[in-house]
Image (tube, rainbow, N blue to C red; front, side, top):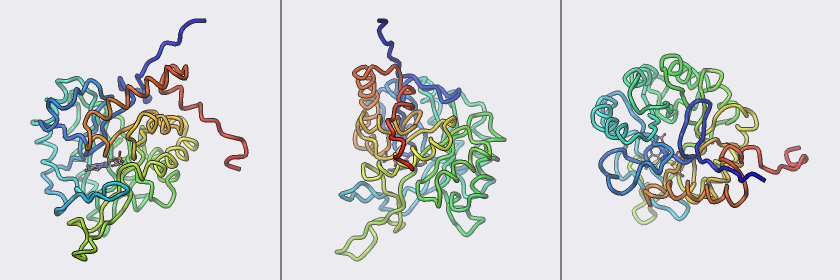
Length: 314
Ligand SMILES: Cc1cc2nc3c(=O)[nH]c(=O)nc-3n(C[C@H](O)[C@H](O)[C@H](O)COP(=O)(O)O)c2cc1C
């Protein structure tokens, strides 16, 4: 019998990553912070922090509250703006050869389009990820994802304008994540990233104050993994040909394998990479170990291996 040739490379309908584990948006500052801490060649790719057109000072501090079930954060898309990114960060990343997924944000539809235009034809970028939890100044400051028509409009307009494949990043807490995903794909999204942090809050009972400067934030880390796996599973069943990047609470190779079995084509690691920048690389190696041990050829092989009893979803 021929030996199985194992490969960790993944192909998301033309968007190729050498490894199935990427660093999630906002959790791998592409700047000098990580120089020497991590070999980017051991990452499948890097998703940038969400970029706005001009500099954005972000949410008031404090921005991170540790809780027993994960971290509650509100960064508010703090960044120096897309022009600064193109001058300062992208060249450094592009030189390493790591595939870059540029995450874009805005406070109006027009801003999303301006950011997407600024990123056109830049070396190193393989796809855009549209951050849909930003607040829409033109619609009562609601997050873009809160209104399906507005969300689809943003995703569709960016997809038409950009030459890059576009991934729409959705939170799990929309009225129906499958319908939200479908609306993004109908509008032109190439793929989906599931999920963003879960809306949350932490309060200091001593001071009687919220622990975040912005009061409300998002919960990330192991506590949200089952929510994310469930969202990936539901969307993957409904849209089996649409590439999904799974994210939420992954801190071990086993966690990543769960997402791949649920239907993800690749995964991203956020909070665990903040704790240990080498975590995504270690997780990728662990996935390889799992594939070898179980005789699977590639991460894509896992997508069809979930053993589901016929009566399970009846
Ligand atoms: C400090 C921090 C900053 C983040 N910034 C962004 C961001 O700029 N854009 C975005 O789409 N998601 C952002 N996220 C969400 C992560 O990309 C990810 O979707 C979420 O944290 C769930 O994954 P995790 O449990 O592995 O952290 C951020 C998360 C954290 C913890």
